Length: 165
Image 1: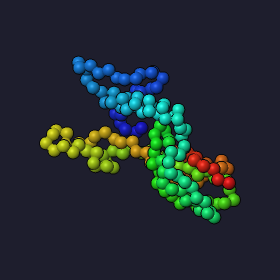
Image 2: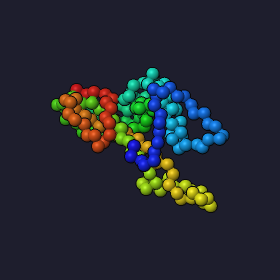
Image 3: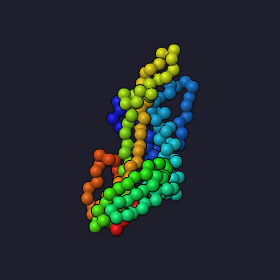
Image 4: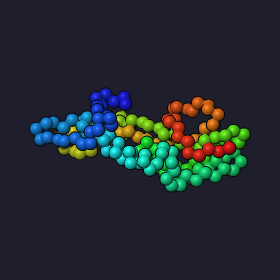
């Protein structure tokens, strides 16, 4: 991440399962970030035992007519979570083999982009001050040739869901 002063020391290899807070020690912002990642790691470990990245959980039915693929909205498992993906219509070249899949785009949102992330409580010292940033993840459908052509990295990371011939 590119946020200044963002600290997170979590590493799964350390096998830390919880942070044990003591009343005589100050709470660190890094510890709050680590709690989130510990929890997300545990959830992902379970999810990865059941699903693999790109598995359809619900919906996402593809209909192919001529050179047009219509994909309905649904839910796909990616990076430890079931994520919603909106419906889409994709144009393809019917002479090539394609993967229909999703791009996962990650973006850090701060109070500069979203003013609602400022403290909303009037009458306190921190009123209207910037709070923590948010990591936003979104999915969009795409058709990528199976020929090995490079994917467009500006759209995010591509995860194939189904292959078409």
